[in-house]
Image (cartoon, rainbow, N blue to C red; front, side, top):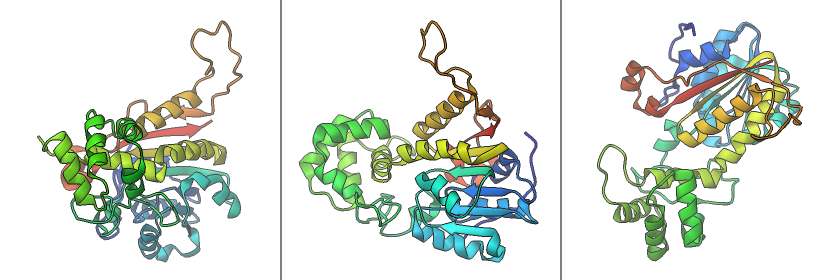
Length: 315
């Protein structure tokens, strides 16, 4: 990939991850239409609008109204060229239809938590400060982390920690959580997990995987991502690109699997004597190998350490 040279366009407290790599992968063009499905603080969106001007347009989507408020302030200078929508990206196709915004030249996802969400008191995303066990991206959602922790049966809770947190000590942690119910705050939960799993032996706190699993369940993140990726292909014009930055292996495997499937001629199960799927490739994989942040970026922005980027092009 050739690298474009862009200034780091930041919202306060938020650095867009792999900004130049993203712009290069999106192949942003003047006058193009783009969708930022996780607009957050607006850093990537601002760079897309800058690179696509004059005439470029962008829809920025975020389920989190607090993040959207920051993005609105950050992007106000772009006027009518940007539309901000407080919705979950699982409604991507519906949103674009509503605004007559198709076909598009690119769809972008920066998954996981933003530093804005981690630092905002009272959201319950982090165990570094005490807060209610919430973890919802939007208060329109009913299910909270407290509901899961205090009502799920022990086997279901253990399965959740294993599936979404890839937590090897899921059974011990689930058992201890059930014994200590009710749990109301992030620090209470972190202490219980630490008691069940043992103290941290490195930089990663023993409660990290539990918090990840709960957040994914609360926000139905993997299911919504799968829906949005499929809709992205329907919205892209020929040569349009999907770019996804993920922050844990579950997201990255889902994206990698989707790209591979849509790049193949046949998706029949192994062992079939003849192809009966009639599948037509819809995607060309742009990033044959996953793209990771440079050492200098990781040093400047530690949040980028676990970022993984993949890109595909509509054919």
